[in-house]
Image (tube, rainbow, N blue to C red):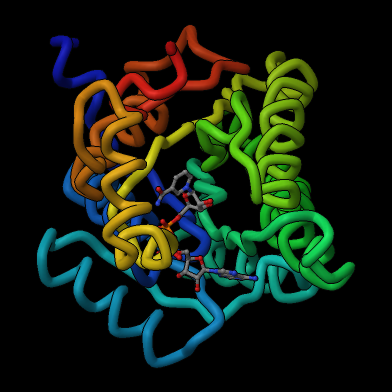
Length: 256
Ligand code: NAD
């Protein structure tokens, strides 16, 4: 097997949560262009079906859109069942769906905390639990948890988000140990600042935007397309001896 062959995903099936836009959409397209069939989930039916069609048209891979909210166990279980019915297997889970509600702790509501933790931490836990059986049966799996540089370092005004991503890093490490014997590798992909809709409040404020760029050693926001190759690495045989790791794609932000 040549080194590039180790990155191929032919015959594999991936499920990407929150895949209708942003980094999830880019990751779905990257996995599909490496040969995987891809199922995307999102809460909005029109958006998820149009994204699935877009991935299929741009890559030629089989693609499926599924409406599912990652905070709802029944919806997650039925999404996994749908993937298994459609493709017959499930090899790669990308826990990508995530939200951020920013603000000083005094100004945040309890419901803000609940919403962020439910989406960013409980959601991946529910999704991992739902894919455990098929992946264990196959004795092969890859889980990629979309964490953040904010699982490792802090910024003011991010108490729910940073707490959720710090928790997600430890969920990653715990499941890496629980599932190692079943050849299911569990890793965290930790982006730095990427120019997506999640960061519109920062991108649209010229002062905050300039201050953010000044803090990034590479001097710019990440382009969404720059996350795809890292996801393909963690989804493939290329990362066969990598589990429980946090892979930073952050322009050098966290090494300062
Ligand atoms: P985005 O807001 O563009 O996309 C997030 C997607 O998740 C959306 O499609 C949204 O609808 C979906 N989603 C939210 N709640 C959901 C739920 N309950 N059920 C199903 N889907 C839901 O954000 P993005 O920038 O593409 O971020 C993707 C992931 O990467 C997130 O987990 C985010 O925390 C992480 N991340 C992003 C950055 C960045 O700079 N953009 C940095 C670090 C980490």
